[in-house]
Amino acid sequence: MGSPGNWDSRRAVGTLDDIGTLLLAQPQNTETVMVSREDLESFLIRMDLDYEEVDEGMFLTRGENSGMPVVVHYADALLLIRMKVMDMPKDNESSKDLYRTLLELNATEIVHGAYGIEDGDLILSDTLELETLDFLELQASMESIELAAATQMQKIRSLAGNGVES
Image (cartoon, rainbow, N blue to C red; front, side):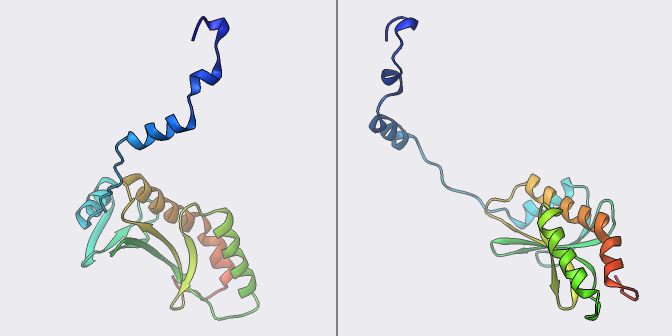
């Protein structure tokens, strides 16, 4: 290449063919190992959560700060996380404001998961792929759901009106 003053960047880079050949020669490890039920249980233990397995692959946990129940369901290739926030109120004048607020919170405040309505209940939920799941991803999802419930509950309940049960 010569001295530093005579450096030629064209010769230092090589050709695209050289780079392609080099990349093809590298060993490719594309095999992934899906998280097992036992792995999931060890993640819950590492998070220091109180939990019980209420059905095969279905764990009921209690949020670290809020104490609210969170269901963690190991199902096929997915991990489903659900927290019931409250019963949905009957449709009334304030329903439009409630729905709008929930959509805005989904877009701006919730990092992992989203609000949804299931069988007349307002829930916070998240779905994670078991194939790529790791401890930090699960922890972030659980903490996001718990934080959303703890910080937004009063606003949501006030929009829902009186007489709403949790």
